[in-house]
Length: 300
Length: 284
Ligand code: SF4
Ligand code: SF4
Ligand code: SF4
Ligand code: SF4
Image (cartoon, rainbow over all chains, first blue to last red; front, side, top):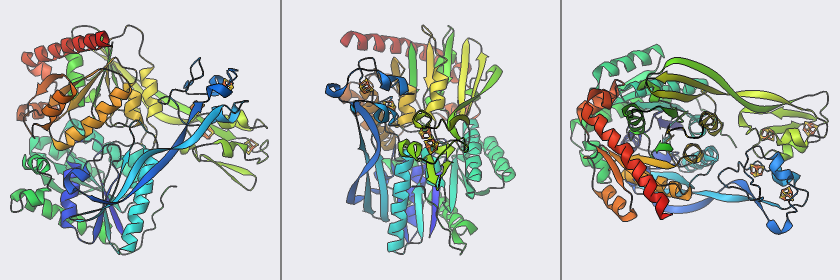
């Protein structure tokens, strides 16, 4: 089983549109959306939810006023200044470390695991999909990502699917790290802008740090061909495989408005052909064809 | 006055708005790039005299001589950063949230202070803008502590523009929570709208007034406009999709430096923000 994660460092580079298009071209695969904070893939794939599960994340403290003697010890031990002078916990500031709970002499701190989001197993017109939704302002996105990746792997194994196509989150922090560790390869989608180049270097460094092979695809390359060349020489320097260039085309947005992938919206266009050939390059790359089984070390 | 520039979805033009807004005003201000995972503002506002400061956070170091392997620390730790194997404590520093609970609870005073590097804060000057940005160390998972360090540079009475990270989870909330007004940058597409709805919900939970900037205003469809009307969200600026704008952005240019007309529009945007913030205060 192989796992390809599409990431971009910077958001808004067309990652989700492309992931959906690839998924429509792949066979024997399933989708996973690990952008649990702002998941969008379902808007194109219109999944039918088969199973809905609660995600129980970390705990947060609540002080039960009736049991509290007002000794003030909790405010002293809380490193996150989450408890005010009336001994009320601000849930936004609370890190869920449980230190107040451990030290309160009156056992006045309630500290229960909470529901922090939901995750789903679904079917789409292009195969199964595992996705999730993290509650607003919640932490533990990394934990939720690890959970749904694990589920995707189990589902793939059960159904003998060979490939997991994952729509990853933006950035280089906890959800991204959780999305790429142990994956077969990442595809970095980049736009030809100074910020695109800057962010690509950082995710490429991250992939290298976790020893994940990385490929690069340039989207909207014709918006600045000089910058496209700069990106390509950078990828060469970093020894990354450039799999192709996609021109700027409003058809991607129109396809999105219509809830379709580009392959459905404009099947015989030049754009569709470009996406198709990029997918062929990716699919036949050594990272996704190598025989040896990769053990996927997923974090708890 | 602290204004956060945020967006549910990445790549909607948040940095374009924060940097052009900062550049167009004619008064001293602080621009803080809190998108520490992928800071970009410095590519547009190119600060001079950059000073770099390494930021780090507490992680435990166990004194094996004193430790008895009682497990109290590992039982307390909510983040699986400590494990006891035999009578030895293993520390996984990258999982530690620096609550210092292990240090407080250890009966043998065996937990000592160590450090994990979070990243750096770079501070410099560009014309009237005093500019700082955080740069998360590659491999570091937690961005909120570094975001908080960048925000600790805010002093009372400062005029501050914050470039917030995308999304609605803890990093974005951390960046927005200190502000008096949130400017939400979005685009009129299904993805843009879907992510905006989530962000508006988050901003409302924080009880901070907000307004919209619609970027690439002529692509996509009308749903966003219907939503804004229904929810009573003021649209404070629209930026059309133009190849020239995309090109200026792609090479790290500022719109307001290329055209006086855009400077006027961003000055108007600032006036609209002040007005919307004042109205929100009255209605509270
Ligand atoms: S430590 Fe317990 S009893 Fe003391 S103030 Fe805090 S909650 Fe109340
Ligand atoms: S759980 Fe930790 S962060 Fe939350 S209030 Fe208690 S001590 Fe503070
Ligand atoms: S400081 Fe807190 S999070 Fe870090 S190891 Fe100690 S108990 Fe765990
Ligand atoms: S609480 Fe102190 S003595 Fe006990 S296992 Fe932890 S470090 Fe060792």
